[in-house]
Image (cartoon, rainbow, N blue to C red; front, side, top):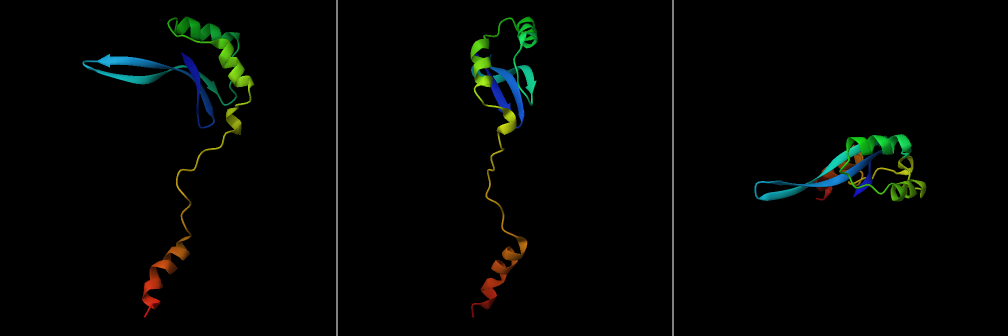
Length: 102
């Protein structure tokens, strides 16, 4: 089943695809369509995806409802994964602090 994937400020229509190589199996995402910064699904998008990927299972109504539901990529903010580093001067003071303990 296809879904919308937001990567930064950009949106993509993707589908999970399971592949078997030898005795191993893995999943990868197949990009069906690049929706851009202002994602919208119109009849031209539907026609192009259906012509290029006839085997893709897509629930167009659910995808349109998801986009209309208020999740817009421009409103998303990137997640900061590391805490901010202290100022270099403060780090230097902290490193020299052990010298003053005597």
